[in-house]
Image 1 (cartoon, rainbow, N blue to C red):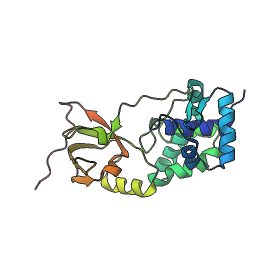
Image 2: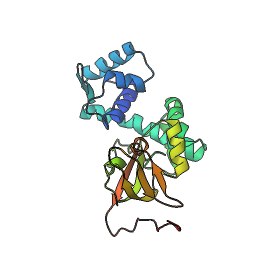
Image 3: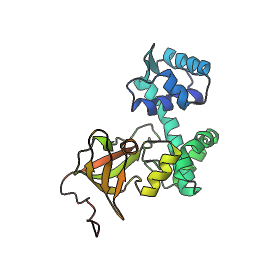
Length: 232
């Protein structure tokens, strides 16, 4: 059976959502896809019938291994488009996801390859999400939510997992973009604020904002901790 672009887009959105949800409810899928409930129900039935997902009534859906395969080309094109929009066309990273949703639908294989070249063959999108290879292999990322990391850990921002534009603008103002190192000084109990030591200054962020940050935790001796700031 020929897999339509719409099927790939739905599979890609389910793939994104199931990273944080054991089952993706149809209401959650609806909130991330610009389509009517009827259209979503029809597509879910189509994907289920062709073995691309498993639908458990009243619980939600989850992709099968075959479903994950058909999601890769759409994920690759979307994330490459985000990099192209930010790196080449100089758009703000906060608007890249929404713009990419529209822009990528006019991209064919030839344009995708050209965008990949012009963007420097990136392996991650501006928010740190891995970009699948051309043959559909998703790179493995070993990171974890910042809110799960113990105090005293040396970290590097790996992914910023939100599409909320206000949050993205604020995170950028703080300098907490992928690749930036910091030291987690403390995390107050009962979902309290976190204190981060980093250059050029320390920051205190709320638990909710920290939930959008995924980090790689450095082992002792890897030399990631920023030097103490004067006056601290």
